[in-house]
Each structure stands twice: as structure tokens, then as C-alpha cells.
Length: 142
Length: 139
Image 1 (cartoon, chains in turn purple, red):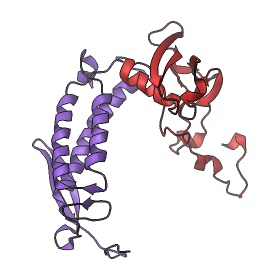
Image 2 (cartoon, each protein chain N blue to C red; image 1 turned 90 degrees about the horizontal axis):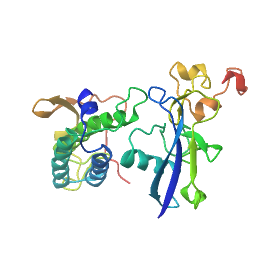
Image 3 (cartoon, each protein chain N blue to C red; image 1 turned 45 degrees about the horizontal axis):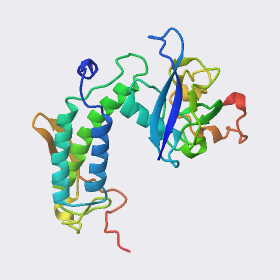
Image 4 (cartoon, helix red, strand yellow; image 1 turned 180 degrees about the vertical axis):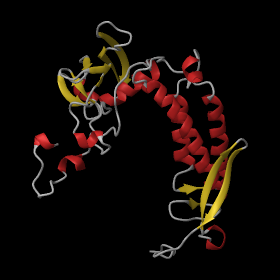
């Protein structure tokens, strides 16, 4: 927080935020592909670098929505990265995750929950088994 | 696309002795909302300008303010309704100003909101235990 507040010159948060929003809508809506996700991941990496030099106008302590928006962008970039990494790894289609390059559901490999952990080397993926209770998962066909 | 002029009442009790007006100019489409203009001013011109917003489409009521003298939501008023006029934005009357267009809503919000329930249309319509609608004092 202090770093953002004390930085005198730098880009404001709104431009990288708009880029991130466009990127995620384009590459990471319901229909996605490995290629698109890889490119978006790269672009998010660049935005994270931009974020290191983000600056704000308002140095005040009172209702500082300028600072709030800048901090939010930091969290959103981490979240975007976690979503992209998870979606890229999941090489199947399931529910609102439709991979154009893997249109079929694959219970053999992918009937499991994705978990993401933040590490120094970037997001680490791991998985946990699905506990099937009352509703057995089955393909949605019309 | 037209140029809009906004005269906004500014006040930061930490820095200003008295409230003052600042005028901003911004390009906008007639179909855009006053809130879009505020966002554009805050993001592209002056990050110190402060106002509340949340849902952005007339449900939450966060961006209540005085627009050319009338209390309204900035997300419900369109640029096209103010063509050729300067738009004056001021905080809601009769509340204490915390900063710029943000007022202290504590005296207005019901106790249930302060204890963590959201101030929402659903909350207002929630029926009493005996089935009657709650009266104003109870909200």
C-alpha cells in the first residue's frame, strides 16, 4: 500500500484494468481454447509487470477510492491468472468451461476439483476428488 | 458524442476549510449515464474525486446525489437529458459530508443493515413476522 501511495509517477489503474477485462472476455468466456488461454496468460503477465508501477492521484486517508481501485486491480490480476492457469490445464469440456480443442467431457481424467496455490514460482495447481452425493454428474444433453 | 460540463461540489474535511466547486469537461454519448461520466473523470482526469457506486444500474442506490438540484441516482440519469446544460453535482442534502459526494448514511440506514444485512430491495420488502409489511419506522 505504501509503495502505491508514495509513487509519484506511473500509469493509473483504469487502463490496465480495461485491458484485463477485454482480455478475459475474449479468451476466457464460456468458449475457450488452449491457444487463446496461453496468449491471455502471457498478456496477464505483462499487465502484472505494468501493475508494479501503478500510481494514484489521491494520497489522503479518507474514503480513498482511488487507492481502493488500484489495490483491487492487483487482486484481480492474481485471480485472472489463477483462472487462466486452471482453465488451460483442464483439457476437457464441462459445464461453463467449453474447450474448443477438447469438446468432450472426460470423467476418467477430470472428475476432480481444481485448487490453486500462490507460490514464488507462480500459481501451483493441485486437485481434490469429487465427493459424489445425491446428484450423480451426468452429461447434459438436449 | 458531445462535450459535457460538470460542476461538482468538492469537500475533503482533512484538507479543505470550506466546500468548493470544481468544473470538469468530458466527452460523452447521449445514451451514457451520468455515472459513466463520473467514472471517466475519476479514471482519466482526477483520481481524488470521490463518490460511491456499486451495482451501476439503479438497484443498490449507492450513487444517490443531487443532480441539478434534484435528488437522483447518477446511474439512472442519461447524458442526453442534460444536453446543452451544465450539470451540477452535489452530495445528498441533510447528511453530513464525509468527502466530495459521499455522505454519512448511518442515521438513515436501519439497524439490520449495520449488523451486516444488505440494504436491498428484498430487505425493504421483507415482511414482518405477523405477515404485515413493516412500516417506515421499523425499516
